[in-house]
Image (cartoon, rainbow, N blue to C red; front, top):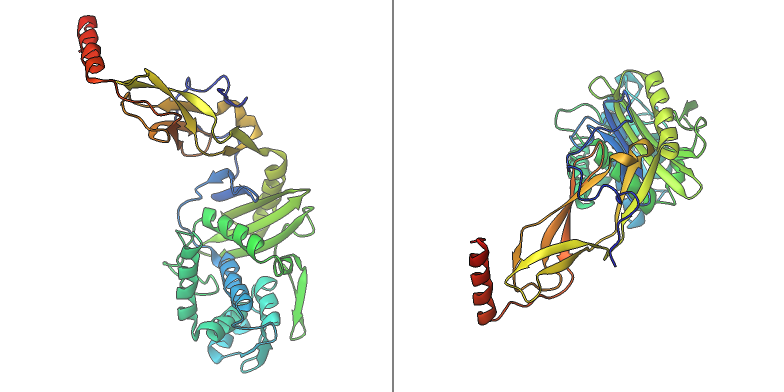
Length: 380
């Protein structure tokens, strides 16, 4: 049975397959809105090129710590000494975000984790990096290797803090994927991201996430800002069964970051939706077969296709099937056509279409008769 989803019913195979601009706009230079469950991108803007992530880097730093806890390398009660290097480059005198660790003091891993996540302490990051890898440089190399292993192809880390370095980069899209990975793989530690404040050395510091306490359901993740990156945020919130992840970067100041973050997260739930376009094994159309015992063969899609979309852009979705006449024999499952799906604000997506059935080649006599008919018709 042939099936076209309602979203495509009047558009399939008729509109051009060129991507169109989305009606949704935002002032943030780098943006991703992602559906957590499917990983589907609902909206993006300059999201695939590497950028300076500032302290959003610390999501990866925390991931390395959580994995070390889970494989037994350390425990929450493991203690690390604060080196002079960590104190000098990450402490209060450095002018950077700090946990206010005392040089040569000994600190538990559990406290260092909160210093990293809640207080964004560069000193805490360096202490953990030195404790786990011997040096921050070695730890950053491990961060990069691990990021690539989990599919973050644009990630290159040169430190554990997000301190500006021309080679320290990751895309907004990969940061969104990292947030999804963090929430999925470390549920026992993820609630730390929603803690509102942490006190160390008599100094109480609040969580910098502008969504916490302002957006209902917000529970993570991490802000970042440097003169190179501008102001950014990796944020997540949950409403009912739905969770959204946003990434923004390149904003001018804290207030602008807060305004944009709250607007985007609201839009993520209210103005965007994940649409089911096709189910696995839906029949899409027919492809002509030359010299086959059948003149054509049905083609199907071999995967479920969903797309995230701004609700106002639904009518702009288009698709087109592309193929060339194939020559028999054809085996069921052969990739003989493609479907190009165009979604506003996104690069076109090409989905392979597979033959539904075998088509055997004609006999020698049948081929000769087919050639003769083509000549008679002036087709060759």
